[in-house]
Amino acid sequence: MKRSIPALIAAALVAATLTTTTASAAPAQHPKPVVKCEFTPTPENPAAKPVRLPSPVAKAKGTVDVYFVTNYGPFVVRMDRAGAPCGVHNFVHLVRSRFYDATQCFRLTNSARLGVLQCGEIYRQEEGGPGYKFPDEVSGKETYPRGTVAYGNQGPGTNGSEFFVVHSFANIPPNYSVLGHVIAGMDAFDRMVAAGIADPDQDGPPAKPIRILKVWAR
Image (tube, rainbow, N blue to C red):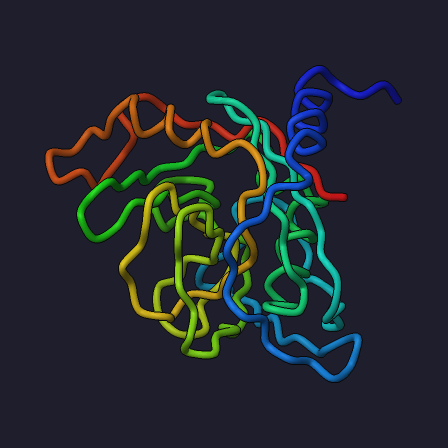
């Protein structure tokens, strides 16, 4: 199958920046190459798109690159399995289930405390998950500098499909599992922020829709 133009653009983008280094939190130590994960169905919040529970066994070493194409341009995230093995395992599962394809990011913030883009919900902000949840993977030492990608949640142990990307900084407690960091395409987020936020408090819907067109992992 021939690769699409957006795919080629994203691939070229990451190839041009493979030598770029990014700050990252110290990964958790896992003595075994795999770990067991606990994914719990949430019948009160059924899946917004058809998706099965992920396998309960996850790789605990290595990285995976996840490519996003948005209406503001492509970006690439390098996810660290050692830091959050169940979280990365889940994210790749959702990507391969096409859960994030043709979705919209409903929250953009740009305040003195928080500068993030929140995505991963299907219906609206914090509504429309995968129909299950799983525990946090945090050490209490997590930090969230520019380019960090982490799971959002509605309290301890409520991870699902929601995630956020830090476009400036996030002065928040270490309660959010870090998946990895953007290694190419941060200029796409600068364009999103420049387009504005439809809220005087700079925390709400983007002034112009932000859409994830396609996501794949390799």
